[in-house]
Length: 154
Length: 424
Image (cartoon, rainbow over all chains, first blue to last red; front, side, top):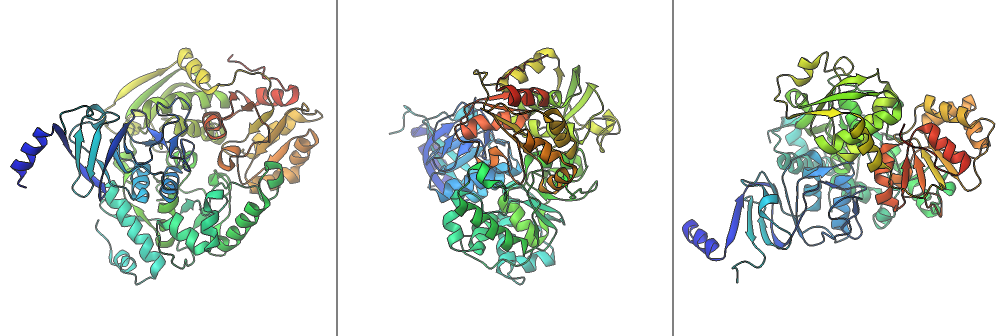
């Protein structure tokens, strides 16, 4: 498919395409789980269930297992990567990660989760993607395709 | 990333499979960050212990398997050689002596002791504290480090002027075997300059107030670099330890400047270094109250567990608690745990502070804390602590509400079983 065809195809499917850069390669798609709150790994998630546990976090009690996790970035303890690492070993990790602010925690956490991850997108993913949207992440080329829930996609 | 010949040799496996896996991880991590190269480090502080139930299955496959998976992100098990550079262990989940009081199953204790013997033999110094800078690992200004532990990282960068990002279990594992870490973030001088101005308008002097200021500030600036001016009295190690831990809990602060106090800020101009200032924040009585209210989530004033020493107490903090308890007895419904690094516990023992605390019915713990171990005394319903960091994390980790206040208020709660604290 040529780029022109692809664009026409995207438009027909009412897809929004964001361009960024690779953090971790690979391709994954799934339902988006979006938060405007930064995420703490150690002390912020339950690594056996894949849920957010932080008090006053808007996703408290919500599972990110198999979701495309869209979030501003990492915060808190340096145990961030170890806890996302354990979500992978416990098979409750997100299917992909899209985040805004690059930090060592966010980078290492994504690397050891072994799930496709992108950042530095040309539009703020938190403004474009909503929870429940269908999202495809191509980590290798840094492309995110968003199909809005209840949109024209068939 | 651009590698030196020595780094290429490691990546090619010429220095053995463990260093090859370590370099492979550093490459993936460095590229994820967008780093252009690695930097040499001879000071690594990480987490090499095996004290949690989650690693039980891995331990059965041996400690090489533990290190390969958890410290190198390698599913292939590789034999782990001695550490290439100075490396220490941070806080663990188990006090090697007081584990029965914690309520830890003996099997986990044996697992931790075997792990310590193994990794200790590879040259990992078992400081077993979140505050390595209190027990001899005090990097000098400009020294490149690879440290975990958010409260230690912010101390290392801001108070000591050494250079580290907040590393993780895997990157410190790789750094310990290679003496390398990505040259990114706080390793680069221009990234260490301030970009938020914070004007402190209400006096900040005691430990609790430093904690409140840090907790309020961290949530707003997240991982940016605040420059603090105004009504702060001269701080000490203890106060900045507490301040940084709070700011790194509510947010991700890894560096701050206090002109005239911290080493990279002789004055405000040096602190900002010509940076554009994102915003100017004002900390007054309303902000102080907001932080206080956010930290205090308990409603029941009957307290049954008092936790002191996060980050691990300095010796003078242990002395303070011992002094407040001397000749008194804890309320029968309350348990009191005071946490200090094992090396300082030795001093506390020698000085009689441990006896003063235990005679009153309290416990002096080392190596761990309730947030890390996930153990509080059985049946705990309400916690009191003088630590903003524990007050932030314990409700999430243990599901138990917390009162936050001064050490005097906490000791009072331990003696009366009631929380009588409040914002003055």
